Image (tube, rainbow, N blue to C red; front, side, top):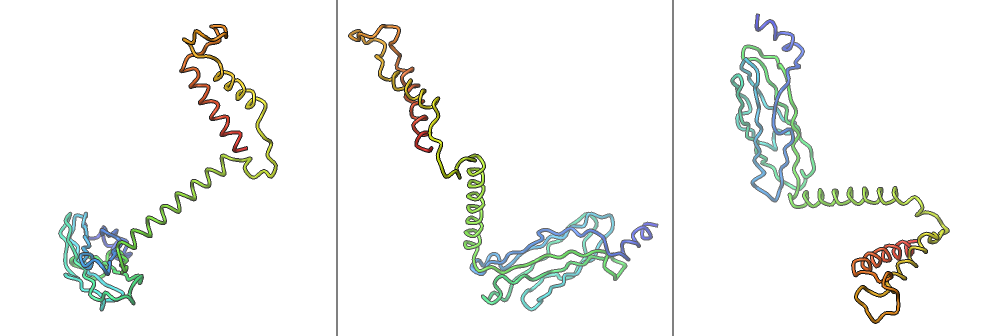
Length: 214
């Protein structure tokens, strides 16, 4: 009864195959990457047998290209690149892992893993970093344009009257005497503290920046 339930999957070949990783990257300048490991998982209650196929078998050496995986276990498949030449840079090869039941020949399921040979890991990291920087600059430019709707106007409207008035008030506040200045002829209630003058100077700086941008 248990085998009869799995028979439709055997015919359709739709059994999910769990492999990690799903992409292999070999770097010509890093010999440690010339050997990669694929891990095939078997989460099922029955044993599986597997077979590894490749579109370019002359470029790779696959240790244990065929074997079996016990129920709820995994197996490592070592793949070594043996033809590291510049003519193969960027070429995408494919490995296909086929699994079947121990007592059957037809594949229950299959999974493809792509493999690529790149010239340098540093160049790859540099390209990825440049790509991230470009994306960041594009996003920054987009938000800058979105929050400046009046930037494309050909004629500037100039500072508003409220901006000019606030600027005059801040200048007047800075010209008033500071608390403790006994020699000033200005009434005492017009004397400002140091903190009040700092606030006035800060607001005046913001107003100046706003006027220069317009």
